Image 1 (cartoon, rainbow, N blue to C red):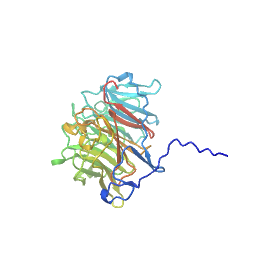
Image 2 (tube, one colour):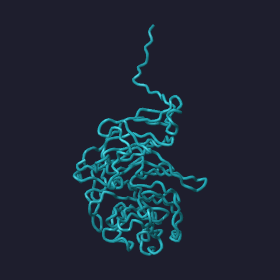
Image 3 (cartoon, rainbow, N blue to C red):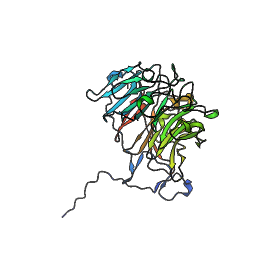
Image 4 (cartoon, rainbow, N blue to C red):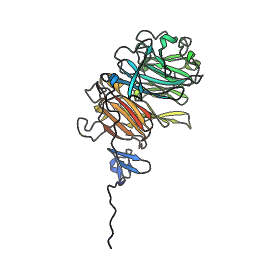
Length: 401
């Protein structure tokens, strides 16, 4: 009698004791790893070889295939219908699943102008339960969109007196029933708050103009990003971070306390909420903010003092030092997305000398000791977003892609 052994196609063994970036390599236990490339940590299976990524809808989109896409956003209307919005060729577009193309959305008050490459999207719910999307770019009057009609604030509301011509907010966020705006080209030190409540009130920034604003000075003269964080609004600068608590304009009479005066955020498009943390990029690397709820405090930590890769080719041994941080490039083009299906933070950047993003750093944020394991893909995204937990949408910044 003979016994036939079962066919074994492939086997993988978790040979490591884990990723250990805390200790000196001289004091590592047997099996500890100091660096790891092209592997993924899976909660149930442990260490696994990193798989590839599948491209879908790789053909150029006919309606704007000769223009880069500089903004993507998944908006959910009042009826819970999902819409994928895009900005390209200074126009606003909506994905049409029937013909696998994008339809142009007419904007009352006119399309975008200039050659802006940085767009902010924000979804908020007014007191009537209606869903709205606010879009701004630091040049044109903000746009309010309800899933059907897109209208400029200058056509339906009362902008702040500072907002005129090509001096308009570069970012607006929703927080505690208000809209907060910042990043104006000629008023970079000011934070503005809308009225509270209905869409009519929240479109009116004039009546609160005298009190609901803070102007920062000295080295904090330019706000770089805003991010709601539970009951706190985080205010990022290039080299510091402050926190704003409270909901009333009366709360703004004193300077918000510092979270840190060591690091800041270069670009609001690098910010992602990952579980109970904020992950973002500064000129020094990738960092996180965590809430210390026992004390009601917020702390920061480094996730990548050095980002590294073992890929071959033009980006071989790419590190954070090779990222193009000159002439505001990190501030202009960097973009990110959080991939909850694999608990990954994706960050698209430019390598030295380039003027468009040409690679993506991918960090596994489930395992931090204290830094995460990073890998790299060659691609040219100018915008990224999550459409559902298992699918990322990327838009190329290269014309014709």
